[in-house]
Image (tube, rainbow, N blue to C red; front, side):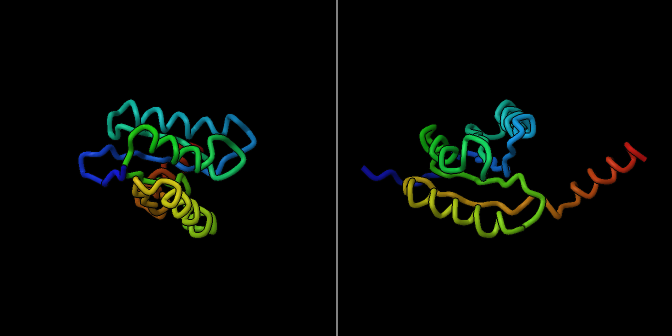
Amino acid sequence: MDRELTSEAPTAVLLIAHGSRNPAANDDLFALARRIAESGLQPIVEPCFLELADPDIPAGGRRCVERGARSVLMIPYFLSEGVHLIRDLTAARDALALAHPSAKFRLAPPLGPHPLLDELVAIRIREIG
């Protein structure tokens, strides 16, 4: 049975970081996902990684769909629009759309440039200055 996209269907947030061999570095994304989920901003929040850590992007996207999402907002935890965002995450979005035709996958731009990022850098400068 085909399921149609509806505005009432849950929207998921798929947070995507690069990934690191250092598990402590990956913990930041898990903590961010937990904070967003606890805020009630979105009903479904899943963290995943491009490489070097689990879950990977296909597993994260699959988990969103298994949890009932019909729209998945892919949010890169990346500062700029480099090769990973342009090539790798775009390819991942397209692969997820093929694997899960009942859901719509939308890839957001990177975190920067953004005035809040400028403000954060200024705060860090003041903190160590």
